Amino acid sequence: MNCIKYKFGVNRDAQGEGRTSGAAFIIYNGVCMITETWKKVLRAILLAVCLLTAGCGSGSAGGTLSGEHSDMSDYILLDGVEHVYYDLDVETMVKAMKAKKTFAVMFGYPACEWCAEAVPVLNQAATEYGMEVGYINTRSNPEWQKNTEITDYDMLIEAIGGYLEYDSDGVRHLYTPTAIFIKDGEVVGFHEGTVPDHNARNRPMTPEEREELLNTYRGMCAQLQNDSAAKQ
Image (cartoon, rainbow, N blue to C red; front, side, top):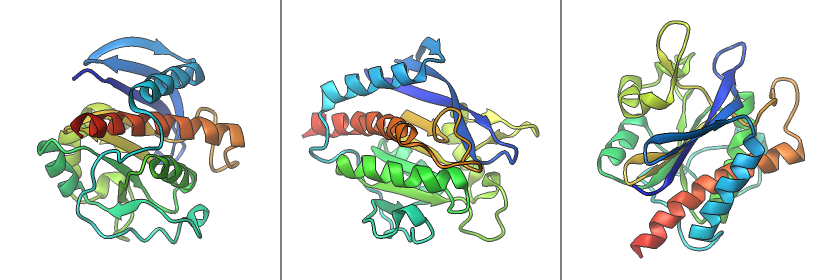
């Protein structure tokens, strides 16, 4: 597949669930090409490449799997905003990957401070690209106290485990927020947390940090839109 796959690594917070961004690397056709800490420069390059091949804000990017419009009322920053999220579960996500579908997914939960800021930013990016995003609430069951307790977590590990780090218990751990962009069943975009040096428990993102995160999501949305345009 001739596309850029990229993932931004992150540093876990004290609770091990919310994340802030750290080092970055690019994978091209499955080969690691570069490892850098110059994240802003890297993101700008990636965004420019994606926009040149896809164009911004026109057409429809990716697909939508069956699901009800998500209740995002607990996300204060989405109050009064028309959102793009629909309910999704791990089983449906994995089946769609096996069926070579193209779509985007956000894992998160309202009480996660990083999610509260990232979810509205992804909503803006997805809206610009005319696409919807599957939403998997990792606390939809009150009994779930960790992301690893969600239904079909073992199935998730089998599908995307290579993108997840091992925690102190030796388990590949999904941290939130995590946005995943899937093209023809393959992960082409993966982003955990918000931006470097942002601790959501201490402060909200600055306007510059929000724009940085927005551009990261835009680049990933462009990957899916490029796929959609190629099939038209």
